[in-house]
Image (cartoon, rainbow, N blue to C red; front, side, top):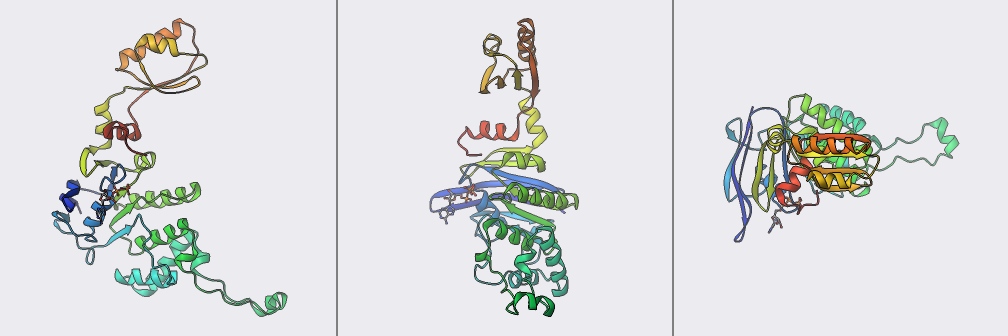
Length: 322
Ligand SMILES: Nc1ncnc2c1ncn2[C@@H]1O[C@H](COP(=O)(O)OP(=O)(O)OP(=O)(O)O)[C@@H](O)[C@H]1O
């Protein structure tokens, strides 16, 4: 299976909001769509899924135009995508039926994902108490009403939406900001599920502002800035291209004068912990030699490739909130 996005373009009036976006996934894995706010990520995703008209370009899944009514695609929208006033279970069964999942199988999958995502209490309202307990409860226990999305927190709505996206066991899973607004426990829960989907050989497209998270998962990426592709490729190749010019240094005393002498640039500093930019190995060695000669205790000296966060900020000129 393969995914090809070619020259995807969207205009609003005379403003181009997605400008000839092209990328491909020849095999399974995670493709990241990154970008500044308003760069065009959600618009691109919605065009890919035919939820938004295009002004140009095509999206091919196995060489055929991607048709969400025929292809098994799961989509987790950035915005809330549930009907607020309808019972959650009814909506999940409806979404499963749209993907031709037989009702009994859909119920089995809902039960499974409800357990995994810890949302059983919203989907399976408790039954009335049995005779024995009813006595204790004074006989007034009543069956709870099925829950609706507007009765759930944002995070729990997101869980139900992820369930809806996974119910058909999709081959292609598109996750728009999947972790935004989740607490650390639920972030780990989502990450675990994403990891399982990757291990199962799925094709995932993920948009996110959380660079560290994207870096955990993605192999290839596109960075968009104001509608244009400004960086694209294999994450490891991109990192190699930048070289080892980021130096993390922690000392027990002030290293400022020696850093200045070596010509290294301080990017950030917190007490005696420095993030530096050096020209390369030679300058880093020179700094280490100066520190050693001066008897400064070095606790950490890590010459490394840039993180995705640093690449992002450098590429888009520090205009993002990533
Ligand atoms: N219906 C519309 N009419 C006019 N402009 C629009 C419309 N929808 C989106 N835009 C514009 O298109 C651009 C891209 O928006 P989009 O939501 O795709 O960005 P994004 O990269 O997903 O941003 P964010 O990270 O903030 O969610 C934005 O400048 C936005 O204002």
